[in-house]
Image (tube, rainbow, N blue to C red; front, side, top):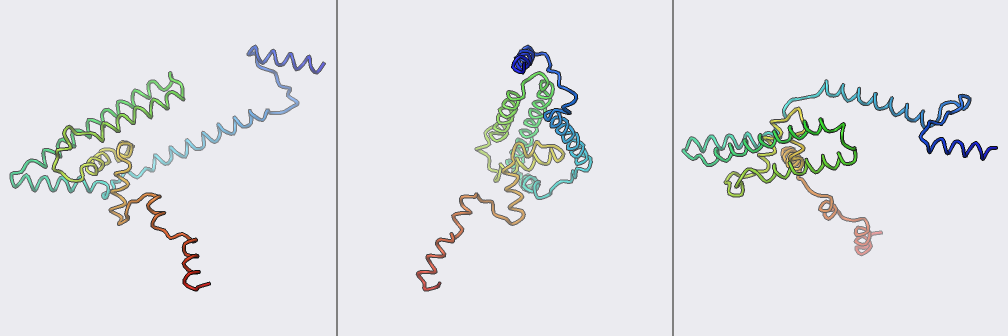
Length: 216
């Protein structure tokens, strides 16, 4: 009898017909987890909306300093009838603004297509699209390898940040450069984990050194 009921339930499940759960069993554990997940989602989305409402859109002057310094230098050289730096800075500005338009169009198109694409494929497409835009940002402007302007990457990063203090464009394009700018302005030296480990003295080395020097 029990086997017959199990077979019937299995066939009903395979046919796609919902299996009726006895009310005496109470709420199914997966249904409880689903409801708890939905409540958490709603709670966190409300908290995120509250954060956006209190978003601090003030400009970090450390992050825009490379661009402001480049402007100052370009203007001084222009006063001396040298237009090289101002022309290069104008090219940087035009390039960053062009990439920003590409970035905004990409996300606008992505939002339109998000409901008609699979989540896995959509994530891969987003990553590939952003990687391509980041590459365009890093490689430009045209003939930038011939520019005399120093710290070109930092200048591009600073201007990208200045254009997007209330969006992710700047950090999406030049995260490492912006972090380096901030670390340098804070008098911290950017480094890597492997280099930091190489600078540290291991406990085993100290123990051997102490033994060889007669210390216990």
